[in-house]
Image (cartoon, rainbow, N blue to C red; front, side):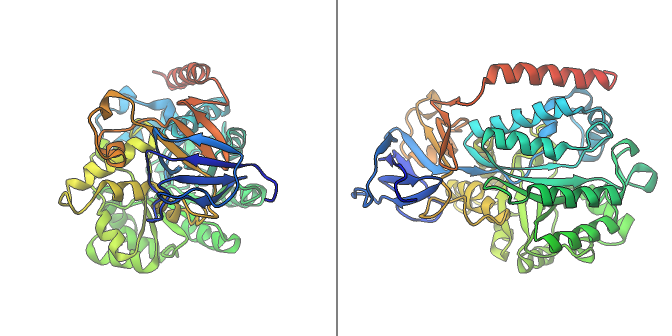
Length: 453
């Protein structure tokens, strides 16, 4: 890195490093890496040739989203699916989603990623499991969009192989054969996994009620062969627990162990309905769980036991989940939601604003097995989010970091990914957000109409 320009993010109003290191006087960035943390009362030890005045900003690691469904941005606040529990909600939306075209999917992906970016999110993970005949290269599209935007991403090759005719939940029009799924999984890993600094591939059969046991087992074997992470929905609702008992004769976690998934390369979306013994087993295996507070509230699924999970050794992060069950892609808002929903389970001093911030930064990075992001520390990737407290909602606040969570921050003022500015003064620098929204809105209308509404 000798000779590269060095940027000093100087004198932030407040800083959160996610690791108790001192960056009170800012950080130095060289290339795509954090070069130095500048403690309170100190000047940089390294030479620098550029500065960014952060005196009005709260400085944080870029947020990390560990579960989403980008395509669902096209069915937000969808009338036929309103006010339904998970299973009927899915059964209502499957026929609409089955009409998804490549053009619509590309717009949904870009809109979701830019929306996340504007909230301070620098690393995204999307669980795309919908592959109707019209959309066989959905992951390839997502990789192209991520590279164009310059965002870090883990794209999971999702799948559904258990249709209604076999006792599953999805219609036959959106399921694929196991051979098709496995062959495409190999292709995607070989084409994209860690081929650059930004993109990772993981494998993600959708859920116990939409894939076969054989596919779960085959996926685990393939993932071990290629050393990639695996992901699925699990223990989201009591209906799912009952489905597993009826279909497989065992609870979801027993099912997970039966198919070879109980290990530290696995992360699960939701993880709400585990009993005490199951939580200990998850921790012993170092399984990861993505907490999705807004989705869990909207669908009335329940409240994840975050403190018990973390105490047991489970890696716990945060995700916005699909925009059709949230209905937004805003990760800094999800931090506040996590604080509020956990306060319904625990006492006020048992889950703090710092605990909520940790979920979205270091915790989420651990869930994705990414030791190079989620913290402000020397050698980490230069992924940053900076927030101003200049809106009425923050007026009168005293602790800037607490205000970010408690007063409800909803947008970042500046965002850097891999050492490159992507947002400044709250504006996406590399595209026209108004034009993107217009195209996305038209695509959403066309998808709804194509399903007969």
